[in-house]
Length: 107
View 1 (tube, helix red, strand yellow):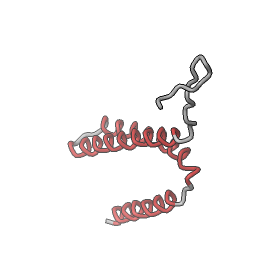
View 2 (cartoon, one colour):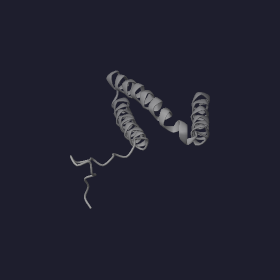
View 3 (cartoon, helix red, strand yellow):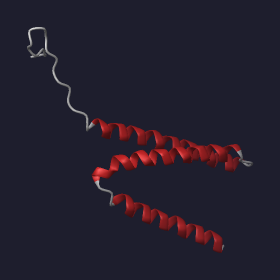
View 4 (tube, helix red, strand yellow):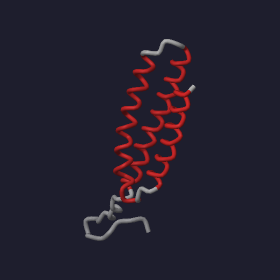
C-alpha cells in the first residue's frame, strides 16, 4: 500500500509542477518549446509501441493501445499548432505586377 501511495503522490506533484511551469512560459518561448515537446512526444510514442509489443495480458495491451492513440494525437496536434504559430511570422504576399508595371488585383 505504501508503494501505491508514493506513486500517487509523485503523480499529483508532477501534475501541479507541470501546470505551474507551463503557465509561466512567455509567448516568445512558446513555439520553440512546442517543437521540443513534439520530439519528446515522439519518444513517448515509440515507448508506448514497445510496451504494446511486450504486453502479456489484455489489460496491458489495452492500456498500451490507449497510450499509443493519445501520444499520436498529442504529437500530431503539437505539429499542427507549431505550424500555425510559424505561419504568423511569415510576411503577407505582395500583389503581382503585370507587364505595364501596374499591380494586378481584383478590384
